[in-house]
Structures are given as C-alpha cells and as structure tokens.
Length: 192
Image (cartoon, rainbow, N blue to C red; front, side, top):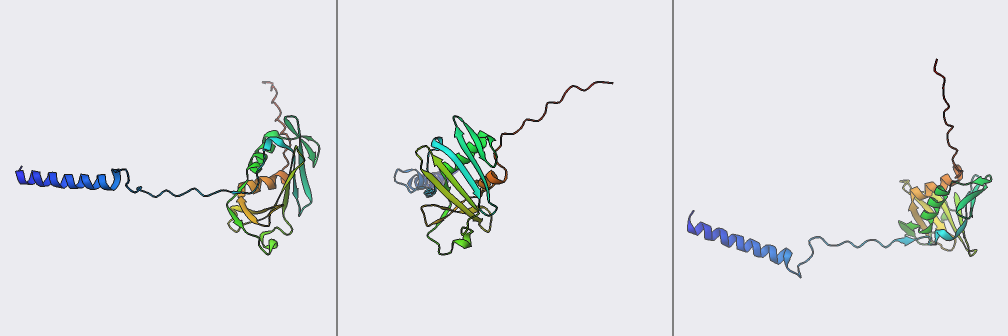
C-alpha cells in the first residue's frame, strides 16, 4: 500500500476518533437521549390498608350494597348476606384503593352529570381503626373505556382512574367476595 494512502487513512481515523470523543465520551458531553422526567402521580386516596376495619361498596342506581368487616386476620360479609368473605379478593381491592392514583385530574367541573357523577354509579366507603372514613364515588367510563371518572368526598375535582380498578369496584357489588366453595371430590366409580 502506498505510504500517502496509509497516512491519509490514519488522519481520517484520528479525526473520526476525536469527533467521537468530543461528541460522546467527554465528561461534559450532552446526553445522547434527553431524559424524560417521570410524571408526578396524582394521588386520589392514601391510607394504610392494614388499618381498614370495613369496606362498603354501593351500587347507587340499583340500590345494592356489599359490606365486609375485618375480624382479626379475616374478612366477614355483612351485606348482602352474612358469612365469610374471600380475604384475598378483599385485600386486593383495598391494596388498590390505599394508594389510588389518577391518570388525569379535571379541576372543579361545572356539570358532574356529564361524568356520571350526579348521581354517581358506585360509592365506596373505607373505614379505618381510628373511625375516619374515605369516600370515593365512580361515575361513567370515559369514551375509550380505559378509565372511570371518580370523585373523592372532600375534593371538587374529577379524576380519571384506571379501568381495572373501577371494574373491580363494580364487580365487588355484582359478584360479592364470598369464599369460594371447593368442587366436590369425585368418588370411586365401580368398574364393570
């Protein structure tokens, strides 16, 4: 290979190396991709689910209520019928409600009926050991049906909460958390 070509390639390589160092590797180089800050969560409810003594969900339009109360480490049904509640299901919904965040907040809308909140579809009431209560009402789902409109008792704002949480609240009334009955064990069948 010709000596001039080798020198030219070394110069090109040195220039390219200097460009890469200056652009990407030096300490004060700008980041390759700008860091997008994480959105600040919009807290709707915040309480310790271990201190909950009762949970009541009411279907306002159909006048149906499901109420469970804590009895030691288990949950008991009070409404619509008395008996044992399926504790994992109760604790799952309380876990979701205890740190409920919204995707969006609508500041003090003038017409709550437009969101299905006057009257609401569902009312959730959580009672804590100290006697304090948290109340959340649900209205309609948004047009895409990926959020529910919700409002807490002490706030004029309307929040958009995740549809899965709203669906769990709805099912708490339509399919109360009774302890499931195990299927019968098949008995022995005689062989002919």
